[in-house]
Every structure is written in C-alpha cells, then in structure tokens.
Length: 206
Ligand code: MD3
Ligand code: FE
Image (cartoon, rainbow, N blue to C red; front, side):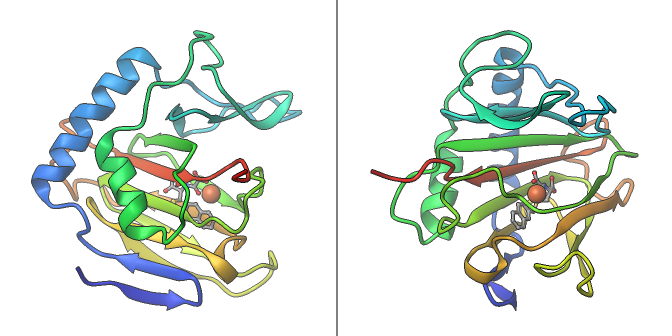
C-alpha cells in the first residue's frame, strides 16, 4: 500500500479502497442512511443550512444546529441511537490511525455536485492525540488545507474515490475545507456526488 506524507502528520493513501471495497462500503452506507437518514445541518446562531448533508455511525455523532456544534449519541431528527460502524471502517482505522483505541465516531458527509465545505478546524473532540482518518467515495473533491493559523498559506489535493487521508500529530488542528467537486469523475454513485467518512476518537480513553 503506497502512502505519501504531504506535511508532518498528514499522510495520503491514494487508492486505499479498491473498487469492490468501495462498492461494499457504499452498500453498508445505504443501510446506515435507511436507519439514520441524511439531514441538513445548520450553522450555530444564524441557522444557515450547510450545503453538505450529514449522518453518523458509531457511538457518537457530530451534529450542528442553531444551538451549536456537539457530539451526541442520537440522531437529531429521529432521536434513535446511531447505527454501528461497518467492519471495513473499523479495519481502516486499525490499518491507518496508529492509535491503540477504537474510534467512537464516524461522520458521514454527502456532497451533491454543487456542495462545498468552508475552511475550518476540527476541535470539538477531547482526544486531540488521536488522528482523524478520512475515506472518500464518489466524485473527486478539491480538498484545501493550510496551517494552524487561518492566514497560513494553503495547498490543494484532489481526493478521489477510494482515497484515504490521515491527519494526526502536528496536522490534527490544521485548517481545511472542500472547495468543490469535479463533476463526472466517478461512476460509483449512480447520481454523482461524493461521500466522505471521517473516523475519530472523541472521548479520551480511560
Ligand atoms: C484535517 N470533512 O467532516 S475530509 C469534516 O471531505 C471535514 O467531507 C471534509 O472536514 C470532507 O470535518 C474533509 C479530510 C479531513 C477530515 C478531518 C480533518 C481533514 C482534516 C481533521 C483535522 C484536520
Ligand atoms: Fe473538518
């Protein structure tokens, strides 16, 4: 398995999932979204809707509404517990994270062709010693990342279907976002668009 270190703590694994693994994971995600439907998160305070729709699997899920950002054990609309993480997702964490405890949260982001995600830091977790592992499925995304300071220079990488990328150590708190999708770059999702899974350890291990 090839991997490329893009910056200290930032490791890119192109083609981590082969086509049959991508299809298997997509099937598992269809089951998850039947039990825990994609919902439209809203910005804290303003209530402005995100262009990305979201759901989660695992013990904790990241949610955003007018009240704020947080992790919670239930779906914000159905009130049900989040579905379990698929085995292939747990295996990706074991193979890529280098962290000795399992993930407790997996955020699933769904991008329609015009969706984007502005530059931000992920800092709603307690365990900053754990990396974040991202898996991409579907159309290629232009991913942008910078540094710890909002004004640090940025670089872009194209994240393709099956790619994994890991942010740990000094890269754990960098600014990052998705500028846009590149249309018709994958036939995995019949209607186009992109799914991204972010695997995390939110709570500190005992
Ligand atoms: C760098 N998602 O859900 S994945 C997010 O493609 C998020 O949906 C994007 O940013 C997406 O928070 C980017 C790559 C990623 C994920 C988590 C990170 C990069 C990260 C956490 C810390 C630093
Ligand atoms: Fe993020």
